Image (tube, rainbow, N blue to C red; front, side, top):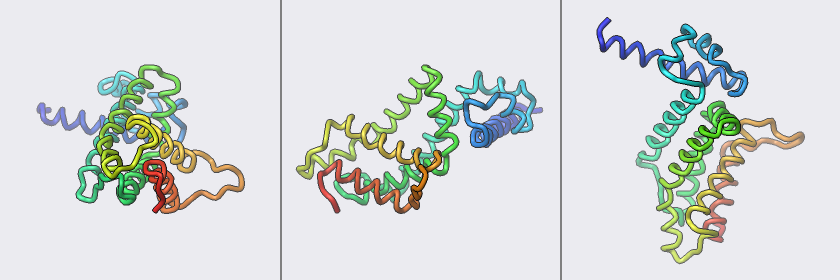
Length: 206
């Protein structure tokens, strides 16, 4: 086998392990998933896991990096809006995050569960969140440039925005709704969050 073939085989196995992990996380939850569950689902030998990842947490870090790369690709699109004094820009980011969470719900839930039980992973996850928030910090400058006042400094304002959207998405996309509550459609959720966030940013409705 040539060096190129070995690299291709290794990349194929790594991708298979990641995909299998996401399926097992969806079925069993992160905390109940064993490494042997992942390798069995991937159709690989149990020992093959350690050729690519030192632990289940390290695999999750790799999935987190994949999510970050996918988010960056979306943000690089021509439809990306960055002026948060414009509700359309806030809506773009809310919809992006909502759809992203919906499409990756088992992995997002796994990230949360891992952070609850592993301090090192929790620190890495927090750093990831702070980095993602920093990427949109400049979007808030448009609000102050328009003569409006943010509810807090940029860092705290972004933290409130992300916590709100993330918790709301978790409630409806990964948890069982409270008895008698009707889950929102994607459009209803995005519009409600957009109005709430935009009013929080600017003190205005639209």
